[in-house]
Image (tube, rainbow, N blue to C red):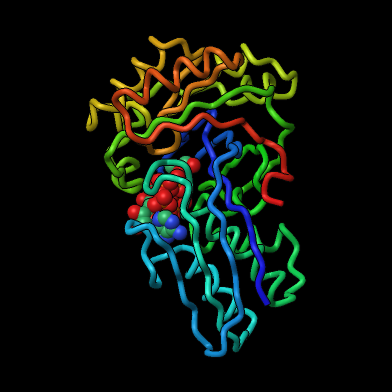
Length: 289
Ligand SMILES: C[C@](O)(CO)[C@H](O)COP(=O)(O)OP(=O)(O)OC[C@H]1O[C@@H](n2ccc(N)nc2=O)[C@H](O)[C@@H]1O
Ligand SMILES: Nc1ncnc2c1ncn2[C@@H]1O[C@H](COP(=O)(O)OP(=O)(O)OP(=O)(O)O)[C@@H](O)[C@H]1O
């Protein structure tokens, strides 16, 4: 038997870090939302008791370093599954971009194998398992829009944000999340107002969402990679209503309401940035269905 799951990318509309915890992780408050750019993952039964990862993207590991592999291995171990599976990843989300591509693949693998292996797990149960794989995986199990707390695994669902275009631009550098958190100096950050962002989302107030964008990791990455600042400047120049780096970067996103302005920004950025996407903000929980 074969089945398919969609694994959408996320952006962080707000990312605040409260403090560094004794376990080395950082306590965060983030507003995450899914966008209409997704990997497609196919799961197929195979005869041998083995996990096989297939992908045409040379940056995607095909062994136990792959987060989809780790999700399958976790389910096999936890539920004593003695079956094999071939996991084919059609990679559409840029890798090491701050868009949770690997985490979303892991979450889609939990959902897909839950169906293939008839495990009967709820989304809440899969979200708890997902946290063992990575901090962004729990959110990705649900998709939609949420406040994520703790190290990212405590999820409170939020309504769909106001409709708009999201232009994503990824400079040709890969950023290590661990490295960005390590460099963060909490005494020198400007904290975003996460509650204000939640209120703007609840009221479907597009201007409020634009005004509230903020990410305490942005300056850390900007200082190491000036090309990220350059893309931010260009996006503003071409007319984005608001611009922010997603997650630990390096992808920058710009929000815009009108189709014609979206087209202008997209065309302008394509001139000097290879990976540019114009996508819709999905933000509802059906985005993973
Ligand atoms: C930057 C974000 O993507 C924003 O959504 C997340 O906070 C990071 O999520 P992630 O990539 O799933 O993170 P993980 O794979 O769990 O952790 C990677 C590394 O980032 C650091 N890390 C991550 C999450 C967190 N709350 N505090 C941290 O300090 C840790 O050094 C960890 O070793
Ligand atoms: N399924 C996967 N897809 C892409 N990268 C993966 C996958 N599994 C493991 N990786 C590894 O994870 C690294 C980070 O890639 P990923 O695309 O998940 O980063 P990211 O978007 O910055 O994640 P996050 O926003 O959660 O920090 C890659 O360099 C790659 O080696």
